[in-house]
Image (tube, rainbow, N blue to C red):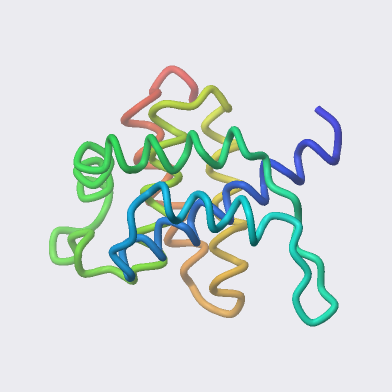
Length: 152
């Protein structure tokens, strides 16, 4: 896979987390959020900084699967979290991340280790100085082992 294609897939994962967060916080429908991101964020420039162009197909797939399979993904995430911290008590950004990653782990064809690594990088983008990336790694590893035990 070319470096550009990998960057576009990485950007799509980041955008998917942002979109899922925005959907939850604003109550906007999937179609409105998808249009906003695809029309105004992919490759847009803000203050002289150009945002990455995202892989539209992967972005749509992650959003659609996260929404369509949200209950299943949330249950999977809950099983990976400690009992006193169910998914509805965790940070909304992490909740969006777990939903996007859960969608790719359960419905996508990328190897689980790639998905985990990519979403740990997304966590680092949102929480550069925190412990969240290690937490994300542990939760996603648990989810992946439950979904695809043969991949390990």
